[in-house]
Image 1 (cartoon, one colour):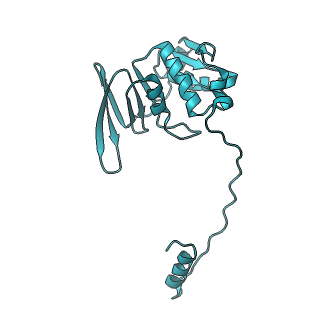
Image 2: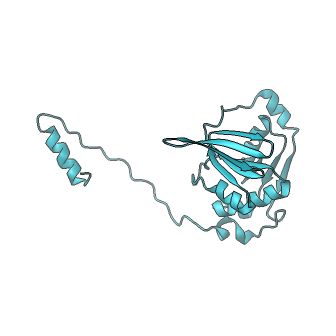
Length: 201
């Protein structure tokens, strides 16, 4: 299990360790603050290369940027195949196979290892930490790394290395009450006038 971020990212590591992971790596450095997907993918690639891997499994999107492109960028940095948005995954020999469900059809995909895959929330039943797992997790090794360990310059990550930066943000205006049209014989005409006024028709 590998995570990048501040101290509270260790909570994710502890949960993963309590649910069966054998060891974890936590990359933490003050210069990571403000990293976009390019900086995060660089750090993950360097950490994965340092620790060694056969298969990298990612989620479908983060809860902050929700871009969903990190697995693809990570695979490109590592120079390995990617099989993304899988709702079913299996590994046999040197091949990873999966099913990607679309709106009208499902595809069967496969790639040779090493590879990067991303999975959807349909890929398996949720697992929860047990008391026994939580206690066992305390004895499992967690390796801590920083940018120096990964040979990454501070100007390559964080706000200094971000390709995209949010300059400002404003709170969304409060919702206003909608217009209620009672049908007293003229409802259809009034609805059509409203839709035409909004350029919906």
